[in-house]
Amino acid sequence: MRYLRHKIDTVWPLFLILAVWEGLASLGLLNSRVLPPPSVLILSAIELARSGVLLENSLGSLERVSAGFLVASFLGVGAGLVLGAIPALARRIVPLFDLLRPIPPIAWIPIAILWFGLGNSSAVFIVAIGAFFSIFLNTYSGIRSVSLAHVKAAQCLGAGPLLIMTDVLLPAAMPQILTGLRVGLGVAWISVIAAEMIGAQEGLGYAIQLNRIMLETEAVVVNMIVIGMIGWAMNAMVGSLEQSLTGWNQGTLAAGQDPHGGRG
Image 1 (cartoon, rainbow, N blue to C red):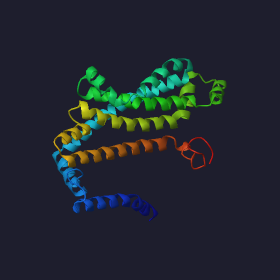
Image 2: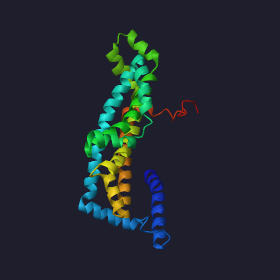
Image 3: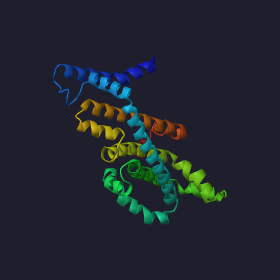
Image 4: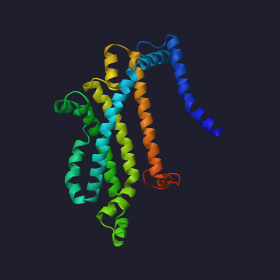
């Protein structure tokens, strides 16, 4: 019963917003051509689903974001581990990353099109660029935050560099690495939609741009809702993975520690 009550408390504000939205549109207080009511959006979603266009575009966007995110994860975690463990190398390379990091992924789109042309390759590049820095920064910070005493203790027990990396640094930094992956995936999803709106021939971003030109406002809104739902689902999946891999770290806030490092 408590679980059901919790779900109702979570969902009822959404239904209230939809009811008010529909009511205002029915009374003519909202321009349905500018902001279609939920009833029109449902019919448009059913039509797009039946035609297969919605599924095709969703799969296209997921394919690009998956490829780019995998590249960003491999490079970001790898670079974070290496530079976090080798300060002398980090002092030479991290400033370059700090210079490139403020450049928004969308600013790379013209360069990506020049290098890779229109299509999947340029979109994957944009996704990888967008996700890389969040993943790298969290991994690097996680490695650098590991107590030197833990490393010294492992060395006293005879652990070599590889064992220290796999059994000391990596497990201790795992919460921050997973946080970086979670943030990076969100940035990757935003980046792929932006890239598709400019330099792709399919995908949810492309569908939004196409329907905007055709003045199909309801299709634009439906695709936006699908983008939000897929993004929510991906975030929930990474959050579940984070809880399962770092369950030992989940009680920190519950124990009264301030999220910014102080005590409550």
